[in-house]
Length: 157
Image (tube, rainbow, N blue to C red):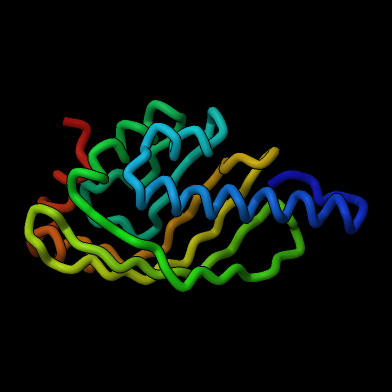
């Protein structure tokens, strides 16, 4: 996390930039614009999944790693993100957000309706660390009821 701005106006600018980066993340991901999504991250940015199932990539990092991890997302899911709520933080560069997705797994036609809590650190308006708290069971059920189906959807092959 970056240092907190010393003036209220500076704090507001940093907070607005951090929240806009998060909103852009949702917009780019739902539109399948993965290259633009990757550009929202710092060069050393990391995406962490504390509840990742076995064999699922738990922390892709760096722009190349993030692209390789997420490049197939538009081929597997169509989602719309809703009910975005930001929680106020002391550090304006930190975003804590709750939101939902309504969507479908394209290979099965099954619903992908997820609830998320995300903790996102930003630096200079870019995402440096994104910790994604989501239920992997929802993804597995949408893609075919197995961990292997979900891991395959996010494989580098």
